[in-house]
Length: 292
Ligand SMILES: [Zn+2]
Image (cartoon, rainbow, N blue to C red; front, side, top):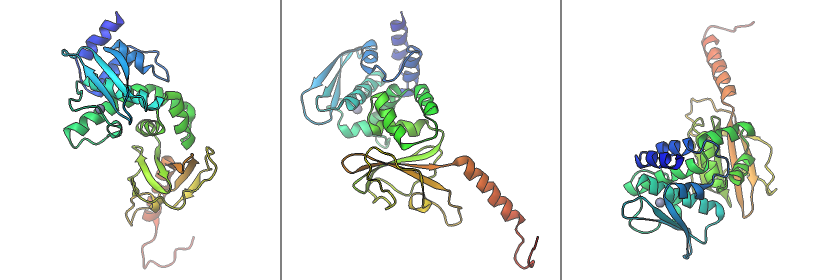
């Protein structure tokens, strides 16, 4: 009965978000790691096959009426990447955006731009995949129980949700109410840099050299939080007060450093209010010394 109801709701189509809402409504007890293959089979995927080719590709074959589909994933994919690929292809299936021109490549599974119809469809399938593998209510509860942001949380979430560290970082930044940013630095070069909604605009992007303050030799042991120079990381106009930015680094194998930047938004708001009060109370030039 539930199956029929879910299918009826999905057939009516819609955005990644409405599809996810329908799936979650019919899986109220969902927990991490989300059983992506079971969900796929429940909504019309009849088989999940191995694709013998090398590389990170995955594809979807849909029957003429679009009621059922077969997902294929490259055998070269790790388990977290395979789970994301299945969720991404399920997204194409339910959104009705299956590709006619061959399989989706590894780069399509990290696409987030929407400037061409092709990229937009890939980005939508990725939004669906992230929302299915890391449902917002579950992630919000996980972040709550983990407490104040810490870079180790990203690796922990990746392990418990069965996703890559990059997918976990993306979703962490989508869901967290905190002002933080995550960067992946490989051999001193930024490979990934993304702020949360509450974090200011960043001055550092993919391909840039990382500031020299990013240092840690202890593999898998996060550093303590240290204060860093805000202007190394943020776009700040000259007349803007620099916020206090702290950084935590987690070194991984192969020269990879995971970095989290954090700004205490409540403390910054108080400091802004203080600065404003001081500015209005301060005697103007020429009034002489004001001794209290
Ligand atoms: Zn795709």
